[in-house]
Image 1 (cartoon, rainbow, N blue to C red):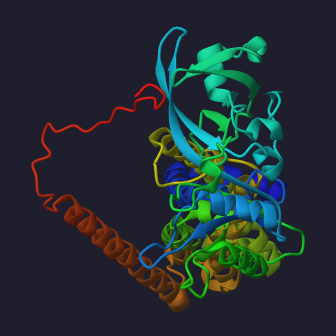
Image 2 (image 1 turned 180 degrees about the vertical axis):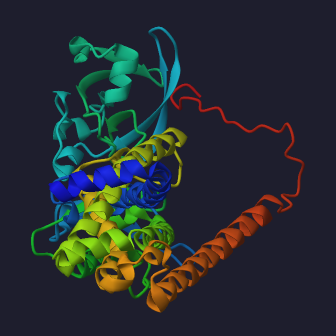
Length: 462
């Protein structure tokens, strides 16, 4: 505690040094914490469902298609005959024109199997989910509302259950409201209705429009499930030339949601890691210069009997104080950055609502502060504690540079900083050049003042 209080007093006597060092650390830790919060929310945090590692998505494949939807008949075959899944559901995204009330609006919706909530292990915050009977023809006129729609259109009223909502000129009964963080299978879905296939739709095999998600049985691997699904497909196939793998691909749901963003985020994480290394080298140089000016003070301490460990501990306390203050400012910077990112709502970044400053992010920032404090504080502390007592006590020692070793260390740090900065600069320059080329691609027409749109008309009427 005495060392920490002394460190605060020393830093208060050098406000310019303290400000530069703290801001440098804050930039490095803040950038790393911000990117880690994105990596944690998108890649590391489990999906908000029960046993998400057992959730998979089933795709068809073709000669020119890596991922293709499935037909109603194929889905019903798999659901009825599979031996690999606890649950298997289908869905497709659609839109609903809502009329009545204060104003008409267009809602993003999903038609989905009635048992989709048992698949993910979630329940409505109000009301109930779908019953299996509501997946039968003519009985699917019920709807689940998203939390946002419930608040926006119904004012969050508790008596909304049982009311009707007119969508596409059909009347739907509201049976439940989903949790605020619920976004399955589409994060922007506002209403869910049962699939309720008609007898004619159930036998369709030549029209593929269904996405399929399943939960593996405990102990069943993706390879086993793939063989089971392929066997069922072949048993019902009218084409004798079915491809060797059955035209089926099974992908973990987490990988499906994350998609191609994983390598991009890891690349960004590596880039901000370079920024942190540059920040550490900068602060190390500052501390080397500062300890060179304090050689007489350190010499007096050693002459009075202070051990090398005691000197190192004293100087590391100063580094730790700088690191903690920098980390606190870095967390503030990271929080602002995340708020800006969420406000921008990038369309290609999944699980945006999962990105937040939570306990793992705090732990990461704290651990980073400890590592950074040790990284930039240990070299100056060790060098100062090993210096000779007699030269340090001379008057000339007040302005001594610390000898050949200290000079070599500072030169090495400068070379490392320049090398890392050059790598980042070249990478940023190449990225900007690539983006500039993308913007300058000739689209074949003049896009100035040109707009695009579409009109979705309800099928029962048109």
